[in-house]
Image (cartoon, rainbow over the protein chains, first blue to last red):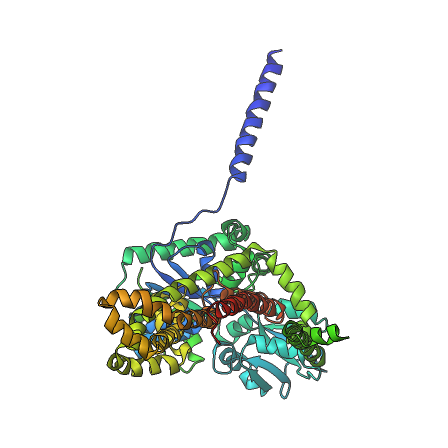
Length: 317
Length: 256
């Protein structure tokens, strides 16, 4: 009888412990701090770092990247600007922008697709390639990685133009196309003959000896309150880490944001963005202190013909 | 037969024919280019999408925000235009003094100012000031025209019979200028509305607004233009309501 009593006691304790444990698992929700400083970022991939702050008044997500870059060199009230790394460093070095580079938040989302028209299925001399942004990030990276293959490359203005060319040109005869996520997935869904030929990020790493594409970075104003800025950088880092750790946090943190507003700010629907992050982080989201990643930043800006950066432009925290 | 001829000669019927012609031309162009939603959606696809959008709360928030910003900008513009326009209508020298400023405001490219307001007030409110910039010259000139078109004999009579300048101004001159001001007010409203949407797109605002909605749908799927056509159609419908109001006011004041 006494043994039965002990057995029931044990079962009771075990049941209680499991209940408490499952309760704490179930209530593990995503939390973050409100951003105190004024932040501006271009929409789409760079804005993903701010996924948990889409409705906050201090956060401006602008669909025109040039508008955001302009905040670096004008007397705006922004304490923190997320901008293409090359444009931000250029603003600091060439136009004396009162900012320092603090961290990189996007590491490239470019992919080379084969169209099924190349007979040897190997990117080689003379192959026809359709790319975009000849003098901007995509085009510069493409030339850096594949420039010595003597390809027959045509550049269009932007990724949408490439996509529309694929969808509307009945005489489309390119062997390969350069695209960026999430457009890659959209094209793969509609063009069954297409497949991913190369991940430009991986090829960049191979070519540069392990360096990364430091596509967009956070720049902080020299005159802003350093404690607030550091707190915000830590908040963004924690958010990004939490997102990459569990992509369901994207849905949890944005449950009050309508899909249309979400798409306007982050470039695609919640489900699509989540699936891209789940699929080996195809948007290239991350958070790395710029100072610790100087070699990659120098390599990336070298594709724009810029020299090595000085230690002075890095934000210490 | 007479009744039939009178129907097809009537303005409402010809107006309806004009609308039918637009839809027919739209349909033919859409079919001829052959890429459907990627380049030029058909009227049917656009109408279906419009129905979908109108059943979504998001689009009403966008309409509301665009109209709110428009009304704020418009109110600022109206107050400024009435004060300055009435004075300029009454004092020729003041009118001449303001002329260079009005010419600049009328001819300077609006888009160039968007970047200025973007820095000054941010993307969310830049469109308010663009509305002021675009509508102020129209409202100002309407006010000036209203005051200037008061017949001389009435001005003379007022000088003789009405000792109180302010009383004469409020009770006689302003009511006489009202038809011009009303038409200017409503005509510039449509322009302000269009400009507000354009400013939302250029300023890159990603919150609520019809311009922001266009950006949102373009970001979701840049190769499907049917939501953008649908938003355009919604904007046209809203402007048409304003046009009807203009028509009614013109009839009320018997203005050509």
